[in-house]
Structures are given as structure tokens and as C-alpha cells.
Length: 172
Image 1 (cartoon, rainbow, N blue to C red):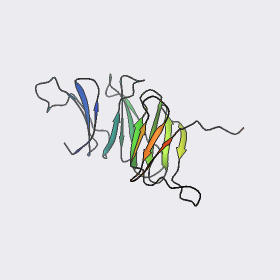
Image 2 (cartoon, rainbow, N blue to C red):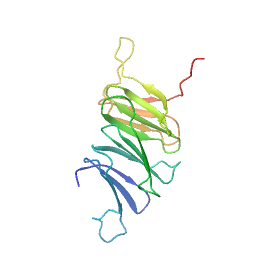
Image 3 (cartoon, rainbow, N blue to C red):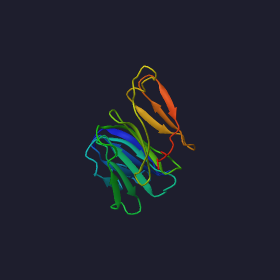
Image 4 (cartoon, helix red, strand yellow):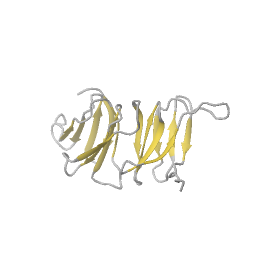
């Protein structure tokens, strides 16, 4: 197993482990031998950056890797999953799934922050602008949703901001 990049507890006995080689392993701590995973996923080809277990979909695992591949796993039928490639270019810097709402967010250096609904429809985006009248967000290191409200914390190397994403209004 390559270096571990992310961990996520499923319940009091099961933990998911994401690795730099893109593999996902699930371990049950009740087993005598913790060295044997009860699930292995190898669909990612690059370093995993986050694993999420959304509470609104109790049997789902969402994994995201640096090459922008996001996979929505159904834990009841582990071979049944769907994948999504957000944005157009750049490697994924950060990913987070809201616990209670059907939204997730990604950040890339080139495209900034993109927010999608559970069906992978773009809801909102924030770009890194560096103009005279606005301050640059900077290279985004981490994004994290508020546990209950639709607020997104964004951290760069030396500062942070909080955004409230809203659905785009369409012109008629």
C-alpha cells in the first residue's frame, strides 16, 4: 500500500483508507487481522485527496483524486458506481461533499471553486481573480462545507474566506 492520504470512518467499526496510488481499502477493526481489507477499490489512477460519506445517502461513498475523477460508490453493491470528471482542466486540489445537502465542491488552480449538485450539474463557481479592486483568494489548499448550513470555507496558504454558494439565475 502506498502512503495514506485520507481516512474516513463509516461507523464505529469500519474505516476507509485512501492512498497515494488511488486505491481505497475498507477495514473492519473487529477482525483479528487488520491487514486484510474487506473492500478494495482501484478505479482511481492518481492520488486520492478526499473520501466523503454523505449522511443524506447512507450507503454512499464519494472519492476524489488529483486527476479530477470523482466516483460515487454504492456500498450495498460495490461494483455499482458512477464517475464524474468536473471542470475542464487542471488537477484537483481539494474536494468536499456536504453532509446533509445534495452538493459537493471541487477546487483547481485554473478554474477556482466549482460547486455541483448530486447529479453533477454545475450550481455555482468562484474564480481566482487578481485585480486592483479585489483581493486574490490565492492557491486554494482546502475547502470544507459547514456541517449544517450551505457555507463553504476556503483556505489558502495564509488566509481563508467563507462563501455562500447560490444557484445561478438564468436569463430568459
